[in-house]
Image (cartoon, rainbow, N blue to C red):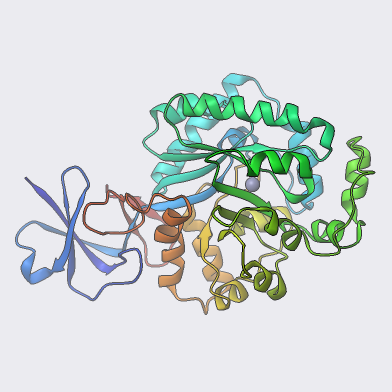
Length: 383
Ligand SMILES: [Zn+2]
């Protein structure tokens, strides 16, 4: 068996930068064999300048919205963003499919190997059947009034079936706290085997206002959308404190955005009976939509398991985990580079439950190999 042997200025193994003069050895199928000292690596080592890392995991994307690149104005707030998505998302199927194929290719070139992808339809199915990327499909259900719950749930089941019939992993997930009724929530949570979940969380201030005091911009949003919320009672708690206890303890949940998450929210998230949580950062989408970033230092201090997502091209200029990492580096220079790479690789793989194949250079895995420039401006796929 012939081997590929890589070394670089820095070698990140999924958890840390390994000592200098180490060589990554993989077989021709991209299976990790070992990391060994250069003196034991023998002939044929290729040396690169920059950082070598396992392939990146993008825990939050909406591939089906790729055709909306540049369609929505920046920094107009989440509620206007949601209006625009609803108003502008309809394009011809050819345009949508072309954009999906380009976005899949863009992620591949940007060193991404696996994606947690939100689906409101099955338009991405054909691309995913042939793609070299691994996709965990999160079929999104929404509907804030109880009367539509059954119809929306049945629709989500059909979409999930479209993916699972091609052996593509798929679960049904609640869209956001402000868009899922308790009736629909119960159907999702208690669906057999549906235990890898995600939800948009605390992306905007009005989301907390709604649950704390039944006030704020969501009330006019519901009115404009003709959604009757007469049955909605504020819990008196923030959104995340309201919905987290509704998940089951054995479920694993990726919380996406977390821009307005407080220390108290995190404390409550760690109390007994809560699901296993991963906190997904989508900094470039946050800057695009509201201009605000989560308190990443706080999340880190509180030992939250952090991962990265690109969100969609409707709210980002590119689909690149490395660019997300770079943005965090710019705004939080005190965060060690090793932590950022760990969130982008092994943590992401654990969040999607694919750490047996992806996320680190452990023997037997096929994580892909990415070479990043030291300043994080660019990366290339080596394998
Ligand atoms: Zn999203």
